[in-house]
Length: 563
Image 1 (spheres, rainbow, N blue to C red):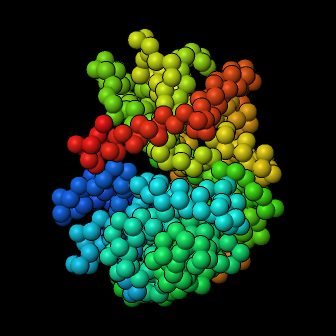
Image 2: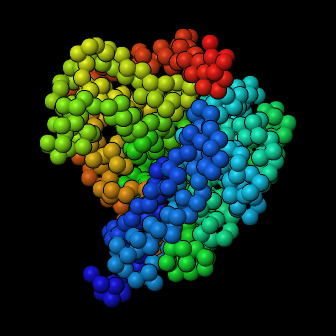
Image 3: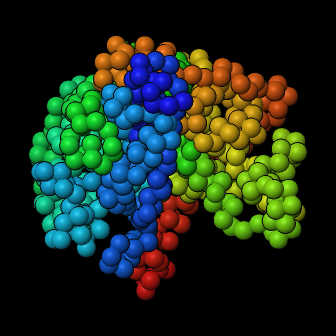
């Protein structure tokens, strides 16, 4: 279809910033039809081993990113998506973005990242910390202990624990480990808001990241008295580095600047929506905006979001924020720090030569081969149970010093059996989260999946069986990007609100997978074993996993003091 035949239509662009790449999608406002998409892998990917340009090694549990990689998505992926859609860029009326969270960076007052200044580029703490930067667990532990000791009201809104992944733990780590960088930091800003600053030329902050990652509850951040008790120089952290009027999700926060228009090839002056988190923004794309519809965004990690009518305290969740997903409901968030990353980790250990030959002969990739072999096994046939904590536990234990466990290995255990046990472990972890929500007073009426892992039929059937409930699927392959486009349409005035835009532009396949009663019974037995392991290693008095993490970190940081 040529641009001329679409003269009566209008379009929006959604840009999804993931862990390893950014993708742009061009969407028709009338019905949500996705007309063109493009992906740009980050050249620097996840910076885990050494600081770019310096060769300086990074300590364990660090994960950084490069701001220029994010700008390149605007310069490369957006024009490519427009070209793929075959539309006239003049017909685009709005753009919106979403980001992994909490991905946060220190910047100057004009938005310049400290990592891009000559004075601070050689300092690791000047660089953006990706969501999976888990080196601030010690700071998170102190934040939590002090909050409970002082009876801080807001701690219950986060299931009783603030995560090492979030703004305060990471900022406190900067202050304590590189106070000069902290002093130079004039803005501590989520990448979700920073990229919008790049598009509009003006700073803005959104309610989603502020509420879930910035401890903004009931109109304010934690008090200066509380922050000073953590560290005297931390007292004014929120007031001087975070405080800014918050924009509602789907609102227009500015217009595309001339510079950003040149980057993207889009018209100057079009609407730019408030920033958002990749998980929460995907809800309207999957039509998961009503109370009780739990959306699992399944990729390298999984984030679970669900709306509820009432405010409830649910132990171990990531947070509850009024209007955090859509206006008029309380948005609840939980998550697992690794899911797809766990499956990829197992493949990186290396498959036997005969497996690789079989995959090549069948035209399969290793995931497909192991999935096919694992699907032929009866439930429990491998004799294994695993804990899905290879990247720590986000919900409901909120402890990134935990690590993975596989129990039941024998000399007869085959690669596909471990693979299946890992698939099952992530489903068990999700069941813990669903049960915690329901026991805490947040009903779950429908379980919906979006993200790349929904393509694995075995995995989806395992989830249906483990959860004993149907699994619906979002139809879009670009859930967060489509969700951002839906928010762009609202910001541009094409739809009155996010719920109505979701009805027009989102889509899902309801009940795509149904639980098998016999397999669900077998999984109940396995889940009981998972729960026993979960409680022993996660909440019991034996802190073996913590001790092993300490031994590893000591060995890697101070080899002469390892043991």
